[in-house]
Length: 122
Image (cartoon, rainbow, N blue to C red):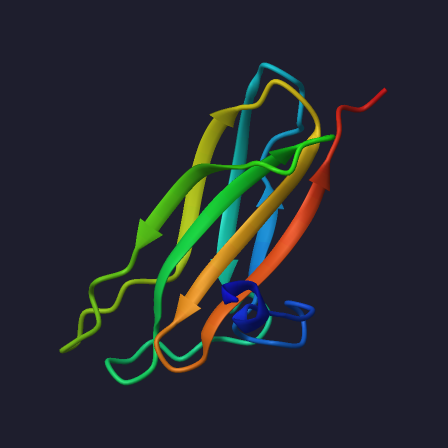
C-alpha cells in the first residue's frame, strides 16, 4: 500500500517535510492564500543528484474522506547553475473547514507529508 511509504515528521526538525503556511485567514467561500515549502528550517539540498521534484496541496472537508487536489508544482530546473526552489503558492476558495494536506517528493528519499487543520474564526 502506498500510504505505508509516505513519511511524516516535524518540519522544524526534518528537511523533507513540506511546511504549510496560511498567507491569509481562512473564511469559507473567500480567497485563501497558502504556501507550501520544503526546507524552511533546515535547507533541503537542491542539486541534480538530490532535489524536491514536486509538491501537491490537498483539502479534505470536515466530515469527508475525499481529498481534493488544490494545487501542484513541479520543479524541473536542477542545473547546471539553474535550480528551482521548492515552494508552491496557491490561492483557492474553500466552502468549509477541514484539513490541508501537503505532499512532497524527494528524488532520493521518497514521499513526505504534513497537514494543517483550518477552521473559520468564530
